[in-house]
Length: 178
Image (cartoon, rainbow, N blue to C red; front, side, top):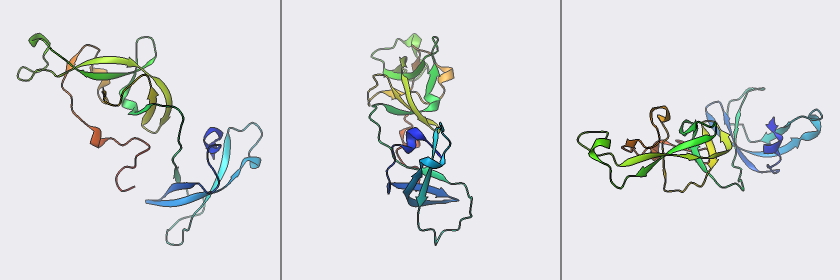
């Protein structure tokens, strides 16, 4: 069963990926069983088919379905850990912006001056999936987002940045061998 808002965007014979046990199996949408659902239901039954002759499976086994859906909403995927509620209850993210000049009193380390200052940016939560959120809020691709430790920083704080881009993989990009 899938939410109608998702199932309505899938087409017959569309390619999907199913995680069956420890294996990733290519499948396709066989049919959507709208008529089998109770009136007013917010879900739709979806049948997928694949060649499982070489893969061990059991009837009734739970699987995870993965598929790509394009959206007409512009935004950026950020880890859920990057989101925080600001004082007014709205969603925000912290950005690390290059500091032009930071006085020695504002340095966070005696030997190395801080290179960035923290600012808070309001964002709109458009969609979330697992540990990721699609947000919009006038962000630019070259901005540095604080993804961990948001409970330890405040706007105006001077910080050193650490690039963790290689450690992150949003929902639209596979992780590892997948």
